[in-house]
View 1 (cartoon, rainbow, N blue to C red):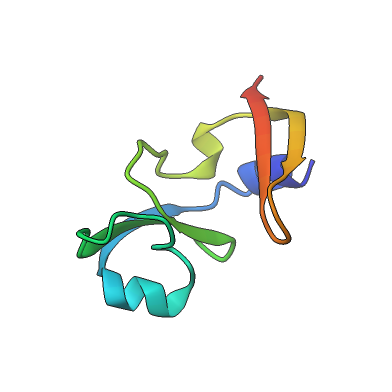
View 2 (view 1 turned 120 degrees about the vertical axis):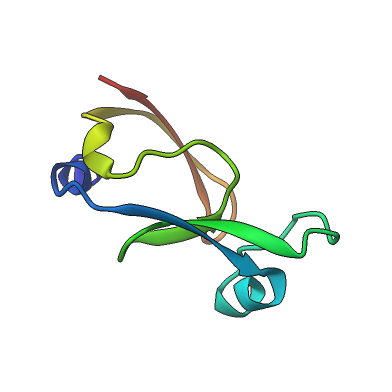
Length: 87
């Protein structure tokens, strides 16, 4: 339900580019990416999260509609993998 509340808020999703060194200084955004990438595309849900990502994204969370949680897996101390579907 927390995710659906964020969707209802219609939060903005920004994308921008940062030099790798700057992105590494903010968080672990570049962890695991090829070393020859000198510039990273950052996708940020303002006030919630930011990640290095090259995929397709909405401009606002309200474009998604409701989601339903299917499965949650722990992937380490601070990481989780979330499986969901748009309903």
